[in-house]
Length: 444
Image (cartoon, rainbow, N blue to C red; front, side):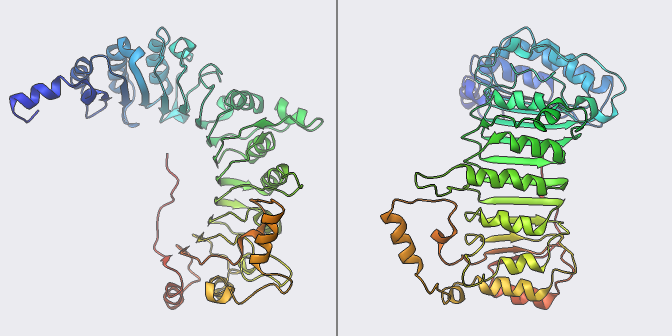
């Protein structure tokens, strides 16, 4: 430490300053050992990470030495993150973690970078941490074969699974059993998985004759599916109840129209005492690289009036009809997604997405214009008063929201059909208009 002797002594005698231990290409085991000694008995945050470009003994020996050095402190681990090049490194190192309990472990992350390039196979460790992780609430596993042990993935609040191909991918029943063991789940993320075979998967075959019972997940607020297979995604959505979901993401799933049915079913499943649908509190919907039936998508949007952010990334099915549907509706109908403030059309280069429909959408959601359109039968205030009188408090009733909100963000990145003059016109009415090339926001 580049400080005076007194401050050095204070720092070295404060265990909380040394609770984060990292072993990597740039962080030596000797430095980690000093931190381990100085941490005394405080909970530890352990990170072991080596570049995916390393393989063989160049990564295997340092990983084994690191785990052997840290193993006596397993009862103090609060979080454990392991990132290694292949399965051999992961399985060999984690077998050292099967003989000790981890009573304080709250977060577990295991990432295998080059699982597709494995030439050798080693049997996975059996029952990590002796199956004793009572505080584990967050689990992120990438290509790690844990035999879908429910002792490891139970009672979770955050579950992220990715990088499972062919025989390593979970069956429908295995995934369902894991989710069933996490009734307090708040976030579910499935990424990069081989899809289920509808002719071989037993759960898919059984649901064709008898509907599966619903798994109630009252706290689930985030659902993310990235190249996880549309059959698996639809089967999962059809088998769970998610009344508190606020964010749903679909990416690279081909035709996601079947998934809309499961979401609409959820919108109608919860009703008040007066049989009015409560709907979903969904505020963010992101669709990337998929296609769908535009009419059924519009019907879904009618059921989620709380939506504030709609992201359609590289979606070929976005046309002027969709934008017109989000604009001023006919006199007898309600606004679709009146709360929407952010709209992304990044990479939507369809020729059917024309300027007239886009400009009409922006203009129709300017408050001064939308306020002039009032229903002849009754105003928004009278509707609200009537709802209060009858004790109706609905999430999914479009009439409760009145005029639409103004668009504050419009993303037209890679929309080559929109020229510079049109972008300047949009900036007069929309606070933020994006048009530069940018990378996708999907991250690990």
